[in-house]
Image (cartoon, rainbow, N blue to C red; front, side):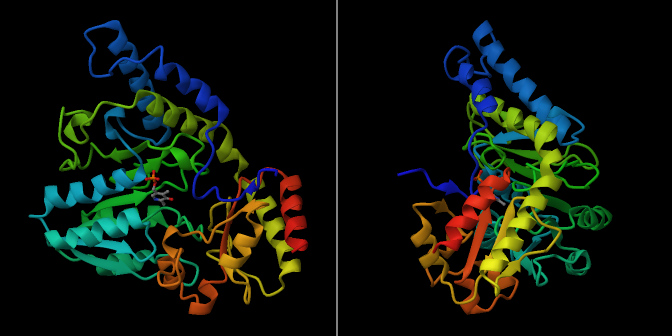
Length: 377
Ligand SMILES: *Cc1c(COP(=O)(O)O)cnc(C)c1O
């Protein structure tokens, strides 16, 4: 049996071979503890971490490499950003604003914080999944301490107006966190231009390793402090204790460096191949409907509804040939349908006729192969 074609790049990506090559020595030869720098072994590890931190901070437009805090992934970074702000600043106010289409690592964290007294406003999105910055403005009260809105949605690919929202939060003197996990692979991010205070990235969504992420924590205007969620040796300026995972940190930086040097430049071509693919798909399924914004969307994402075709059935029947998903780990059963698709008011039936196809759309050859498979079912 040949390996199916992988079409789930919004769920995870393979490690780029150059990233892997860069990481390998740090598993064995250069194994020191980056916090034990009394000797050469620790020093070499620390040097690698410093370099990685520098690379990442420069690419993201940070003022200092100290603004990058390494975590075990985006789930932890989102938890740290939200719990860290709330617990540190809750005497200033207990109100947090988010959207209905955030990743579960944001929504579940906020739900949990209600136990600690948080009041949460969940903003609606329009039919494309877009948040209206004016709605953010209107929702801010004198009790608001944090706005958390994702940069690009992992299910429907919609890219949110983060810099517009940043202007509003800055003016209102409210902390602003964005989950930039999905966008980091394809678009330049400049944290200070965006006026964000906290920003999350993840290794395995940008052709880097799993189990590593980073949180940008602003250090100027204002100097943001976070209450840690993991206590211990005081690593990462006390915000995230635990021995640093040197190979994964090296891999995260290399993956982001490759995005900047290569993947940012592929966006137009990826979008073009994707749109052509969509056009041909429409020839096979004339009723097909695209979910998410037609142009303000990730270049590697399609989210489509095919009326009358149940997604679970089609995905299962194709699984020897292509790996596609419904796009939401939360929609594995009928009882729990996607909160994102509900938020864009897709009707209940259509939610179960919906697929996410995410590829690197590198080659037309690949998309033609996929079309052939779909044509033959
Ligand atoms: C995958 C994903 C996460 C979680 O990232 P992990 O590093 O796997 O914890 C968070 N937010 C978004 C938007 C994602 O797509």
